[in-house]
Amino acid sequence: MKIKKLHPNGTALLPEGTYAAVVKQVEFKNKAGTEEAAKVVIEFALTGRDQALKREYSPRIESRSPLLHDSVTILGRRLNPEEEADGLDPAILRGLNCQVVVRHRPDNNGKLKANAATVLGAVAPATH
Image 1 (spheres, rainbow, N blue to C red):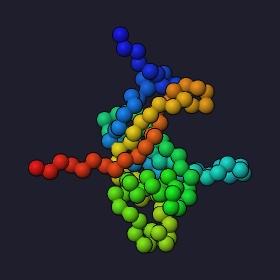
Image 2 (image 1 turned 180 degrees about the vertical axis):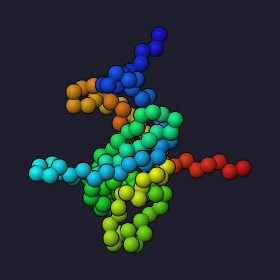
Image 3 (image 1 turned 135 degrees about the vertical axis):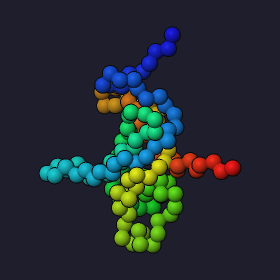
Image 4 (image 1 turned 60 degrees about the vertical axis):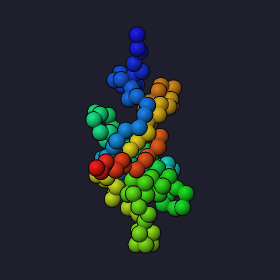
């Protein structure tokens, strides 16, 4: 007998593993009138799945920032001189393919939730 882990909303929890994905949306969040730091939220649509996953980043693009690292991974190239000088607009990632490693972690209420733990480059199509 196999017991399915459930997402907090009652649906089956997405199994851990690596999934092909597309960057569905890039959103900049900044709550006006609060001291909460601004965020960039990238939403990944997982190929063959109904569920999408979001990953939050600090909007800083600097040498060791996760947003820079994942952007370069998704782009499949280093930033060009113009992007380095003017700053990278993460919105250019929209529609690009990648892979997402899904891991389960407890949310603030202690319930398991599927998270985009790592972003990997897209798998190149096989050539014969």
